[in-house]
Image (cartoon, rainbow, N blue to C red; front, side, top):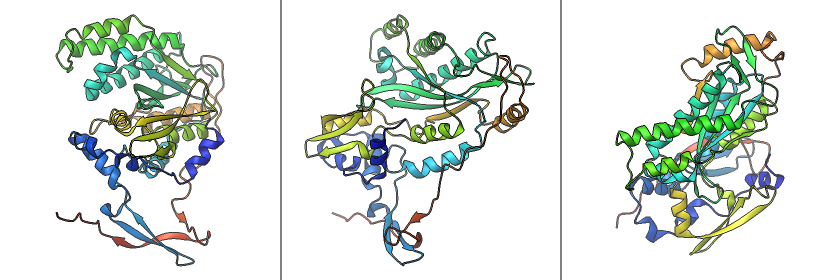
Length: 389
Protein backbone atom coordinates (compact mmCIF):
# COMPACT_ATOMS: atom_id res chain seq x y z
CA UNK A 1 0.00 0.00 0.00
CA UNK A 2 1.32 3.44 -0.92
CA UNK A 3 2.06 5.75 2.01
CA UNK A 4 -0.16 8.88 2.39
CA UNK A 5 2.78 11.23 1.71
CA UNK A 6 3.53 9.51 -1.60
CA UNK A 7 -0.12 9.65 -2.65
CA UNK A 8 -0.26 13.36 -1.81
CA UNK A 9 2.88 14.09 -3.84
CA UNK A 10 1.37 12.37 -6.90
CA UNK A 11 -1.55 14.81 -6.78
CA UNK A 12 0.71 17.87 -6.52
CA UNK A 13 2.46 19.57 -9.42
CA UNK A 14 6.08 18.32 -9.54
CA UNK A 15 8.78 20.93 -8.98
CA UNK A 16 11.11 19.37 -11.56
CA UNK A 17 10.60 17.17 -14.60
CA UNK A 18 12.64 14.58 -16.42
CA UNK A 19 12.90 17.00 -19.33
CA UNK A 20 14.61 19.53 -17.00
CA UNK A 21 17.32 16.96 -16.28
CA UNK A 22 17.83 16.27 -19.98
CA UNK A 23 18.36 19.97 -20.62
CA UNK A 24 21.41 19.82 -18.36
CA UNK A 25 22.98 17.04 -20.49
CA UNK A 26 23.75 18.89 -23.73
CA UNK A 27 27.16 17.30 -24.32
CA UNK A 28 25.93 13.79 -23.47
CA UNK A 29 22.86 14.11 -25.71
CA UNK A 30 25.07 14.64 -28.75
CA UNK A 31 26.51 11.15 -28.29
CA UNK A 32 23.19 9.28 -28.15
CA UNK A 33 22.25 6.75 -30.82
CA UNK A 34 19.14 7.19 -32.98
CA UNK A 35 16.70 5.33 -30.72
CA UNK A 36 17.89 7.06 -27.55
CA UNK A 37 17.87 10.48 -29.21
CA UNK A 38 14.27 10.03 -30.41
CA UNK A 39 13.03 9.19 -26.93
CA UNK A 40 14.90 12.06 -25.29
CA UNK A 41 13.72 14.50 -27.97
CA UNK A 42 10.10 13.38 -27.50
CA UNK A 43 10.28 13.91 -23.72
CA UNK A 44 11.90 17.34 -24.19
CA UNK A 45 9.11 18.42 -26.57
CA UNK A 46 6.24 16.88 -24.58
CA UNK A 47 3.50 19.38 -23.70
CA UNK A 48 5.36 22.31 -25.24
CA UNK A 49 4.49 24.58 -28.14
CA UNK A 50 6.70 22.41 -30.36
CA UNK A 51 3.91 19.80 -30.51
CA UNK A 52 1.00 22.18 -30.81
CA UNK A 53 -2.01 22.08 -28.56
CA UNK A 54 -5.55 23.26 -27.97
CA UNK A 55 -7.46 25.98 -26.16
CA UNK A 56 -9.86 24.90 -23.42
CA UNK A 57 -12.67 27.03 -22.03
CA UNK A 58 -14.85 26.53 -18.97
CA UNK A 59 -18.47 25.79 -19.85
CA UNK A 60 -19.67 27.97 -16.94
CA UNK A 61 -17.32 30.91 -16.30
CA UNK A 62 -15.55 31.21 -19.69
CA UNK A 63 -12.10 30.82 -18.10
CA UNK A 64 -9.57 29.81 -20.78
CA UNK A 65 -6.36 27.77 -20.59
CA UNK A 66 -3.88 26.52 -23.17
CA UNK A 67 -2.98 22.81 -23.10
CA UNK A 68 -0.09 21.58 -25.22
CA UNK A 69 -0.09 18.13 -26.79
CA UNK A 70 1.68 15.11 -25.31
CA UNK A 71 4.49 13.22 -27.04
CA UNK A 72 2.80 9.84 -26.32
CA UNK A 73 6.14 8.11 -25.90
CA UNK A 74 5.78 5.17 -23.50
CA UNK A 75 8.94 6.19 -21.64
CA UNK A 76 7.62 9.67 -20.86
CA UNK A 77 6.34 10.08 -17.28
CA UNK A 78 3.80 12.74 -18.35
CA UNK A 79 2.08 10.59 -20.98
CA UNK A 80 0.97 7.54 -19.03
CA UNK A 81 -2.12 8.78 -17.19
CA UNK A 82 -4.55 8.84 -20.13
CA UNK A 83 -3.23 5.57 -21.58
CA UNK A 84 -3.50 4.00 -18.15
CA UNK A 85 -7.16 5.02 -17.73
CA UNK A 86 -8.14 3.66 -21.12
CA UNK A 87 -6.30 0.39 -20.49
CA UNK A 88 -7.95 -0.04 -17.07
CA UNK A 89 -11.39 0.48 -18.58
CA UNK A 90 -10.70 -2.36 -21.00
CA UNK A 91 -9.34 -4.65 -18.27
CA UNK A 92 -12.22 -4.09 -15.85
CA UNK A 93 -14.54 -6.31 -17.87
CA UNK A 94 -12.08 -9.20 -17.64
CA UNK A 95 -11.93 -9.41 -13.84
CA UNK A 96 -13.51 -12.38 -12.08
CA UNK A 97 -15.06 -12.39 -8.60
CA UNK A 98 -12.19 -14.45 -7.19
CA UNK A 99 -8.92 -14.12 -5.31
CA UNK A 100 -5.97 -12.84 -7.36
CA UNK A 101 -2.28 -13.31 -6.60
CA UNK A 102 0.81 -11.22 -7.33
CA UNK A 103 3.96 -13.16 -8.31
CA UNK A 104 7.30 -11.60 -9.30
CA UNK A 105 10.00 -13.39 -11.35
CA UNK A 106 13.49 -11.84 -11.20
CA UNK A 107 16.48 -12.37 -13.51
CA UNK A 108 19.69 -12.95 -11.48
CA UNK A 109 22.44 -10.35 -11.90
CA UNK A 110 24.73 -12.98 -13.45
CA UNK A 111 22.63 -12.74 -16.63
CA UNK A 112 22.22 -8.97 -16.78
CA UNK A 113 25.01 -8.51 -19.33
CA UNK A 114 23.32 -10.94 -21.72
CA UNK A 115 20.00 -9.13 -21.32
CA UNK A 116 21.45 -5.65 -21.82
CA UNK A 117 23.23 -6.71 -25.00
CA UNK A 118 20.19 -8.52 -26.46
CA UNK A 119 17.06 -6.90 -25.01
CA UNK A 120 14.56 -7.80 -27.73
CA UNK A 121 15.47 -11.49 -27.76
CA UNK A 122 16.03 -11.97 -24.03
CA UNK A 123 12.87 -10.15 -22.95
CA UNK A 124 10.89 -12.43 -25.25
CA UNK A 125 12.61 -15.48 -23.73
CA UNK A 126 11.86 -14.16 -20.26
CA UNK A 127 8.14 -13.81 -20.97
CA UNK A 128 8.04 -17.31 -22.46
CA UNK A 129 9.85 -18.87 -19.48
CA UNK A 130 7.57 -17.15 -16.95
CA UNK A 131 4.42 -18.18 -18.84
CA UNK A 132 5.50 -21.80 -19.16
CA UNK A 133 6.50 -21.91 -15.47
CA UNK A 134 3.11 -20.73 -14.23
CA UNK A 135 1.16 -22.90 -16.65
CA UNK A 136 3.13 -26.03 -15.79
CA UNK A 137 2.82 -25.42 -12.05
CA UNK A 138 -0.94 -24.90 -12.39
CA UNK A 139 -1.48 -28.04 -14.49
CA UNK A 140 0.23 -30.19 -11.85
CA UNK A 141 -2.56 -32.03 -9.93
CA UNK A 142 -0.49 -31.70 -6.78
CA UNK A 143 -0.76 -27.92 -7.00
CA UNK A 144 -4.03 -27.07 -8.73
CA UNK A 145 -4.66 -29.26 -11.77
CA UNK A 146 -6.24 -26.46 -13.75
CA UNK A 147 -5.72 -23.93 -16.53
CA UNK A 148 -5.22 -20.51 -14.98
CA UNK A 149 -5.14 -16.97 -16.39
CA UNK A 150 -2.50 -14.33 -15.77
CA UNK A 151 -1.18 -10.99 -17.00
CA UNK A 152 2.54 -10.16 -17.07
CA UNK A 153 4.21 -6.73 -16.91
CA UNK A 154 7.92 -6.25 -17.65
CA UNK A 155 9.95 -3.86 -15.50
CA UNK A 156 13.71 -3.40 -15.87
CA UNK A 157 14.66 -0.97 -13.08
CA UNK A 158 15.26 -0.64 -9.38
CA UNK A 159 14.24 2.41 -7.35
CA UNK A 160 17.75 3.79 -7.96
CA UNK A 161 17.46 3.21 -11.75
CA UNK A 162 19.89 0.29 -11.83
CA UNK A 163 19.28 -2.49 -14.34
CA UNK A 164 17.09 -5.20 -12.82
CA UNK A 165 14.79 -7.05 -15.29
CA UNK A 166 11.81 -8.72 -13.65
CA UNK A 167 8.21 -9.55 -14.45
CA UNK A 168 5.17 -8.81 -12.30
CA UNK A 169 2.32 -11.30 -12.74
CA UNK A 170 -1.32 -10.99 -11.69
CA UNK A 171 -2.58 -14.59 -11.45
CA UNK A 172 -6.11 -15.95 -11.00
CA UNK A 173 -6.56 -17.87 -7.77
CA UNK A 174 -7.87 -20.89 -9.64
CA UNK A 175 -8.80 -22.06 -13.12
CA UNK A 176 -10.77 -24.43 -15.30
CA UNK A 177 -10.24 -28.14 -14.83
CA UNK A 178 -8.85 -30.30 -17.64
CA UNK A 179 -12.33 -31.14 -18.97
CA UNK A 180 -13.46 -27.48 -18.70
CA UNK A 181 -16.44 -28.61 -16.63
CA UNK A 182 -15.86 -26.73 -13.36
CA UNK A 183 -13.89 -24.01 -11.62
CA UNK A 184 -11.01 -25.22 -9.45
CA UNK A 185 -10.17 -22.69 -6.73
CA UNK A 186 -6.75 -22.41 -5.15
CA UNK A 187 -6.49 -22.65 -1.38
CA UNK A 188 -7.42 -19.30 0.20
CA UNK A 189 -4.32 -17.13 0.56
CA UNK A 190 -2.02 -19.56 -1.26
CA UNK A 191 -1.15 -20.26 -4.88
CA UNK A 192 2.04 -22.27 -5.53
CA UNK A 193 5.21 -22.97 -3.50
CA UNK A 194 7.75 -20.32 -4.53
CA UNK A 195 10.69 -22.74 -4.32
CA UNK A 196 9.06 -24.93 -6.96
CA UNK A 197 8.40 -21.88 -9.13
CA UNK A 198 12.03 -20.76 -8.73
CA UNK A 199 13.44 -24.10 -9.88
CA UNK A 200 11.04 -24.36 -12.82
CA UNK A 201 11.77 -20.78 -13.90
CA UNK A 202 15.54 -21.26 -13.68
CA UNK A 203 15.51 -24.37 -15.84
CA UNK A 204 13.19 -22.96 -18.49
CA UNK A 205 14.97 -19.63 -18.95
CA UNK A 206 18.48 -21.15 -18.94
CA UNK A 207 17.42 -23.75 -21.51
CA UNK A 208 16.10 -21.05 -23.82
CA UNK A 209 19.23 -18.94 -23.40
CA UNK A 210 21.49 -21.89 -24.14
CA UNK A 211 19.51 -22.72 -27.28
CA UNK A 212 19.91 -19.13 -28.44
CA UNK A 213 23.66 -19.21 -27.79
CA UNK A 214 24.03 -22.52 -29.63
CA UNK A 215 22.13 -21.05 -32.59
CA UNK A 216 24.31 -17.89 -32.56
CA UNK A 217 21.26 -15.72 -31.98
CA UNK A 218 22.71 -13.88 -28.98
CA UNK A 219 25.18 -11.05 -29.51
CA UNK A 220 27.88 -11.49 -26.87
CA UNK A 221 31.31 -9.92 -26.46
CA UNK A 222 32.55 -12.64 -24.09
CA UNK A 223 34.76 -15.56 -25.00
CA UNK A 224 32.69 -18.08 -23.03
CA UNK A 225 29.08 -16.89 -22.62
CA UNK A 226 28.02 -20.30 -21.33
CA UNK A 227 30.05 -19.57 -18.21
CA UNK A 228 27.38 -17.05 -17.22
CA UNK A 229 24.69 -19.69 -17.62
CA UNK A 230 26.65 -22.15 -15.48
CA UNK A 231 27.10 -19.51 -12.78
CA UNK A 232 23.38 -18.70 -12.86
CA UNK A 233 22.47 -22.39 -12.68
CA UNK A 234 24.37 -22.73 -9.38
CA UNK A 235 22.20 -20.09 -7.68
CA UNK A 236 18.75 -20.20 -6.13
CA UNK A 237 16.52 -17.92 -8.20
CA UNK A 238 14.17 -15.46 -6.52
CA UNK A 239 10.45 -15.79 -7.14
CA UNK A 240 8.39 -13.63 -4.83
CA UNK A 241 4.72 -14.26 -4.09
CA UNK A 242 2.92 -11.43 -2.32
CA UNK A 243 -0.26 -11.83 -0.25
CA UNK A 244 -3.36 -12.12 -2.45
CA UNK A 245 -5.37 -9.04 -3.34
CA UNK A 246 -8.43 -8.25 -1.26
CA UNK A 247 -10.72 -8.24 -4.29
CA UNK A 248 -11.16 -7.01 -7.86
CA UNK A 249 -11.06 -3.35 -6.84
CA UNK A 250 -7.63 -3.79 -5.27
CA UNK A 251 -6.43 -5.56 -8.43
CA UNK A 252 -7.44 -2.53 -10.50
CA UNK A 253 -5.65 -0.15 -8.14
CA UNK A 254 -2.51 -2.25 -8.38
CA UNK A 255 -2.68 -2.50 -12.16
CA UNK A 256 -3.13 1.26 -12.33
CA UNK A 257 0.15 1.75 -10.48
CA UNK A 258 2.25 -0.83 -12.29
CA UNK A 259 1.18 -1.36 -15.88
CA UNK A 260 2.11 2.08 -17.22
CA UNK A 261 4.90 2.94 -14.81
CA UNK A 262 8.15 4.31 -16.22
CA UNK A 263 11.63 4.13 -14.71
CA UNK A 264 11.16 7.34 -12.73
CA UNK A 265 8.28 9.76 -12.27
CA UNK A 266 8.61 13.53 -12.20
CA UNK A 267 7.34 13.60 -8.61
CA UNK A 268 10.43 11.73 -7.41
CA UNK A 269 12.86 14.42 -8.63
CA UNK A 270 13.43 16.84 -5.73
CA UNK A 271 16.52 18.91 -6.67
CA UNK A 272 18.46 19.81 -9.80
CA UNK A 273 21.38 22.02 -10.82
CA UNK A 274 23.71 22.06 -13.81
CA UNK A 275 25.74 19.11 -12.47
CA UNK A 276 23.61 16.94 -10.19
CA UNK A 277 20.09 15.62 -9.79
CA UNK A 278 18.55 14.35 -6.54
CA UNK A 279 15.56 12.02 -6.40
CA UNK A 280 13.57 10.03 -3.87
CA UNK A 281 13.75 6.28 -3.68
CA UNK A 282 12.11 3.70 -1.47
CA UNK A 283 14.29 1.32 0.50
CA UNK A 284 12.70 -2.10 1.02
CA UNK A 285 14.43 -2.33 4.39
CA UNK A 286 12.56 0.85 5.42
CA UNK A 287 9.44 0.86 3.22
CA UNK A 288 7.74 3.74 5.06
CA UNK A 289 10.71 6.11 4.68
CA UNK A 290 11.83 7.86 1.50
CA UNK A 291 15.56 8.13 0.94
CA UNK A 292 17.42 10.54 -1.32
CA UNK A 293 20.05 9.77 -3.97
CA UNK A 294 22.16 12.35 -5.81
CA UNK A 295 23.78 11.54 -9.17
CA UNK A 296 25.71 13.46 -11.77
CA UNK A 297 23.26 14.37 -14.53
CA UNK A 298 25.23 12.31 -17.09
CA UNK A 299 25.07 9.24 -14.83
CA UNK A 300 21.35 9.80 -14.25
CA UNK A 301 20.81 9.92 -18.02
CA UNK A 302 22.89 6.77 -18.53
CA UNK A 303 20.82 4.86 -15.98
CA UNK A 304 17.53 6.09 -17.42
CA UNK A 305 18.51 5.00 -20.94
CA UNK A 306 19.17 1.46 -19.69
CA UNK A 307 15.40 1.04 -19.52
CA UNK A 308 14.37 2.01 -23.03
CA UNK A 309 12.37 -0.85 -24.52
CA UNK A 310 13.01 -2.11 -28.06
CA UNK A 311 10.64 -0.59 -30.59
CA UNK A 312 7.38 -2.54 -30.79
CA UNK A 313 8.09 -4.79 -27.79
CA UNK A 314 4.89 -5.55 -25.85
CA UNK A 315 5.64 -5.08 -22.15
CA UNK A 316 2.16 -6.22 -21.03
CA UNK A 317 1.09 -9.72 -22.08
CA UNK A 318 -1.80 -12.03 -21.21
CA UNK A 319 -1.83 -15.83 -21.02
CA UNK A 320 -4.07 -18.81 -20.34
CA UNK A 321 -7.65 -17.82 -19.58
CA UNK A 322 -6.71 -14.20 -20.34
CA UNK A 323 -5.06 -14.85 -23.72
CA UNK A 324 -6.58 -12.54 -26.30
CA UNK A 325 -7.83 -15.12 -28.86
CA UNK A 326 -9.99 -17.11 -26.39
CA UNK A 327 -10.45 -14.70 -23.46
CA UNK A 328 -14.13 -13.83 -23.97
CA UNK A 329 -15.17 -17.47 -24.32
CA UNK A 330 -13.08 -18.74 -21.40
CA UNK A 331 -14.06 -15.97 -18.99
CA UNK A 332 -17.76 -16.44 -19.77
CA UNK A 333 -17.39 -20.10 -18.83
CA UNK A 334 -15.50 -19.22 -15.63
CA UNK A 335 -18.19 -16.74 -14.58
CA UNK A 336 -20.90 -19.31 -15.10
CA UNK A 337 -19.18 -21.84 -12.83
CA UNK A 338 -18.22 -19.26 -10.19
CA UNK A 339 -21.71 -17.75 -10.04
CA UNK A 340 -23.19 -21.22 -9.66
CA UNK A 341 -20.99 -21.81 -6.61
CA UNK A 342 -19.32 -24.89 -8.13
CA UNK A 343 -17.48 -26.90 -5.45
CA UNK A 344 -13.78 -27.17 -6.30
CA UNK A 345 -11.12 -29.74 -5.45
CA UNK A 346 -10.42 -28.15 -2.07
CA UNK A 347 -14.02 -28.19 -0.89
CA UNK A 348 -14.27 -24.41 -1.19
CA UNK A 349 -17.40 -22.76 -2.57
CA UNK A 350 -16.90 -19.78 -4.85
CA UNK A 351 -19.16 -16.77 -4.47
CA UNK A 352 -19.79 -13.89 -6.81
CA UNK A 353 -19.02 -10.42 -5.52
CA UNK A 354 -19.94 -6.92 -6.51
CA UNK A 355 -18.14 -6.02 -9.73
CA UNK A 356 -15.54 -3.29 -9.44
CA UNK A 357 -16.49 0.28 -10.21
CA UNK A 358 -15.27 2.35 -13.09
CA UNK A 359 -11.55 3.05 -12.48
CA UNK A 360 -11.41 5.87 -14.96
CA UNK A 361 -13.51 8.36 -12.96
CA UNK A 362 -14.34 11.40 -15.07
CA UNK A 363 -12.34 12.38 -18.15
CA UNK A 364 -13.61 15.97 -18.00
CA UNK A 365 -11.26 18.44 -16.32
CA UNK A 366 -12.81 20.65 -13.65
CA UNK A 367 -12.30 24.38 -14.09
CA UNK A 368 -9.49 25.62 -11.79
CA UNK A 369 -11.18 29.03 -11.36
CA UNK A 370 -14.86 28.41 -10.57
CA UNK A 371 -14.49 24.75 -9.48
CA UNK A 372 -17.96 24.00 -10.88
CA UNK A 373 -17.67 23.98 -14.64
CA UNK A 374 -15.54 21.77 -16.89
CA UNK A 375 -12.99 22.64 -19.55
CA UNK A 376 -13.97 21.92 -23.14
CA UNK A 377 -11.87 22.34 -26.29
CA UNK A 378 -12.72 25.49 -28.28
CA UNK A 379 -9.68 25.82 -30.55
CA UNK A 380 -6.44 24.25 -31.72
CA UNK A 381 -2.82 25.43 -31.91
CA UNK A 382 -0.48 24.36 -34.70
CA UNK A 383 2.95 22.94 -33.75
CA UNK A 384 5.61 25.61 -33.41
CA UNK A 385 8.16 25.18 -36.19
CA UNK A 386 11.80 25.40 -35.26
CA UNK A 387 13.49 28.49 -36.64
CA UNK A 388 15.93 28.02 -39.50
CA UNK A 389 19.55 28.90 -38.65
